[in-house]
Length: 246
Image (cartoon, rainbow, N blue to C red; front, side, top):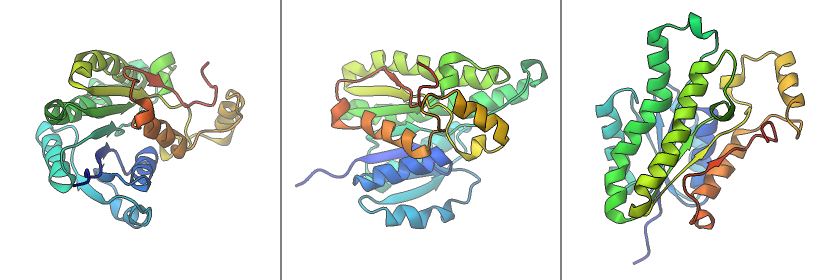
């Protein structure tokens, strides 16, 4: 009997990077559970189903609620078997002076960017441990590496994912589970759509390759880390950023 296709869970699949991740995994024959929340996921399904290769199931969940994250992982397992690859891509941004941020806004940002990754990981690790294999990949940000003025909270929440990556790689390595992180540079997504052309031009100028990244660039990095070619890679931070940070 041939092995089943891998079961991949992507959180935040309705975003630009998340949607590109789903497409990339489907094209190589993986079955993907695409998580969304308060988004028009129906608009993405035709393209995903036309991608060929694997099958896709879209499941809604509020990632700030532990019981819904547990139900999401259970739904992914019911659809395609125990989760082999978790990609934690869901997140949100916040810009402004730290002194202008409320405690509630701070808590909400960390709930989406950091706590949700913890909850999703906690939900899939037991099955991965039983099977002696599995992969967890977090989507951080270049700001998690360098920090960013007027994005201190966002940078802190993404930096926490980097520390989580390194710690969990040590904790889960003996169980055969690899944990890595992708920290994108400036990517042309809806999250950055509020930037005016002057700001976008400045970011392109600060990038040695002279262009903004595409969601597909991030997906390519994730696909590599999830591939057999990266079998000896864990606890690492891969940053597709066009040379923005060297």
